[in-house]
Figure 1 (cartoon, rainbow, N blue to C red):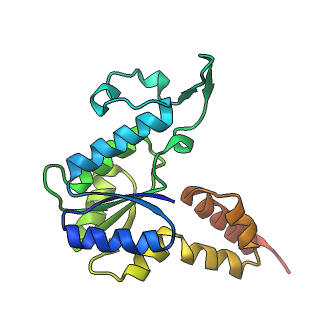
Figure 2: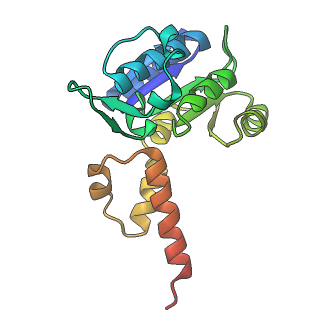
Length: 200
């Protein structure tokens, strides 16, 4: 998985990075909201358009081109923004210098509403209330402090896969399809609804 972490405490960010890299995830870290947003936009430019563009030029690209991939022949193919997301998950510290985590999340979700975001915050109630009010959606939230194994489990959707296994789903087959977090959650919810409506 590709993971972007924004955490202003370098020691904590390094611990997160090492724990995730031990599980063979590719991890990029930034120490403030501004750098996180710039790194996200630069990576999105590269994934979406196949070229490195400065993040400042991203705002100049017409919105109608945001969901297209351009081949070398010059023809365009539509694809969902989620398919071109540069990171599988973005982990944001809630309180960061320059731009706080909530504002970074707003910017990212405005560009890609399907981007998976996890807030790491000591202020769970405030973060949850603000995510609903400002983002108009609930994002994942981990209350600091948390163990590194808990972080890895959340990123890797361990609990979701355990729930799928309990429904007798071949999770190796599901994993082989490399679904997004959103697709895994959707699958689990659909299977639970089916199971609920079964009559025996």
